[in-house]
Image 1 (cartoon, rainbow, N blue to C red):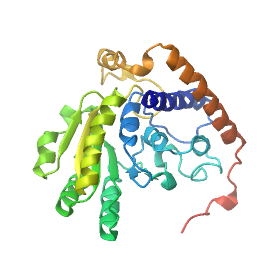
Image 2 (image 1 turned 120 degrees about the vertical axis):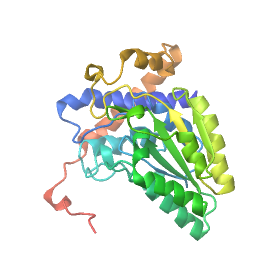
Image 3 (image 1 turned 135 degrees about the horizontal axis):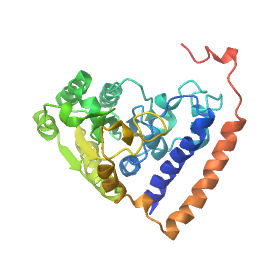
Image 4 (image 1 turned 45 degrees about the vertical axis):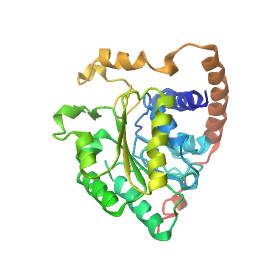
Length: 303
């Protein structure tokens, strides 16, 4: 049940963000992972401390699943000096290199090539015990750097897992309006093994499939591709719901929610909630008590 615990922890952290957001305590835009937690938890359960994950701007779940500290996370979102980047990064540019979380970016698809570059560096240096994860949404696959990165990783046989969280949307635009290619055929045209699951609500299924994909990368020292279908419950950016925007239906979203293990009512989940609530309260106390940045901090750590 550890996987469910970790999924619930991420959801409760983001539910707390929703609670805090109207009070102007969060000093940056937020892209919530509610509904997609199982992807991060299932994948990261197969990673070693030396493995790196290159996350995107919807990165809270991967940050937490890979071991990023929670007190510094809240402080960062509040723009405090006690944050992981001293309040300068906010939600969209999270990074915790000591935990293998390499900086996110607000630019779609921009960190995919960074993962490939890191994998190349590891190969050159003979670091044969490391795997690099390029995490992106399906909207990133229309970007040129995505195709360039696939080609380069395949050509140079690099230990990188291309991980697509496929919620079928690029902001409000469905995949049918964006992609003329078929993803499995595209990936296989580069000679890259392709893995897929439609059950992105189940962390155990994801853990097992990710173990196969990551195991291939770790053993063969070459690239693989893993696509996980999922659903984001909240709006593209912000804490609210946006079903009134008309680009998706409540019926489809309800189909996902009906399979969501975190929405079941069990005594075990309630026990987990009490434990996680205490951790969140402690982390928030740290964040609230962290000092505000000063003018002297403005140019600190700038090279």
